[in-house]
Amino acid sequence: MSKLIVYQYPKCSTCRNAVKWLEAQGHELELRHIKDSPPAEKELSEWVDRSGLELKKFFNTAGEVYRQEGLKDKLPGLSREEQIALLSSNGMLIKRPLVSDGKQVTVGFKAEEYERVWGK
Image (cartoon, rainbow, N blue to C red; front, side):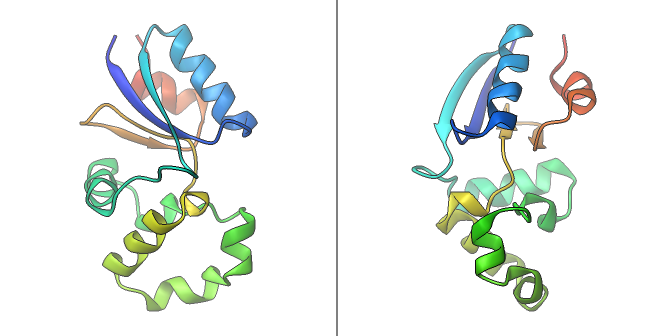
């Protein structure tokens, strides 16, 4: 199977479930701590483009930092570049886990989507 980069927060049960699922499929994983080493702006920008998702789907809208910063109201007024810079500046703003093989990208963990994208 392919080698995947997984940005995750080790204490997050969703991340742990995703890692367990990916390992069970035989993927080799490069685990990166999303809080300590968030993805760079360039990498994030490329992943947003590859994912086919709206940029707002990359934000952890349920997260404490998102709420504290009032980003629900601020994001619409920010440019794409500003939003990506914001995500890159604080990994806790990123919906996790963030998984890529360099070609495809998934955000969050839904078994059906993982089966479609990362399944055998």
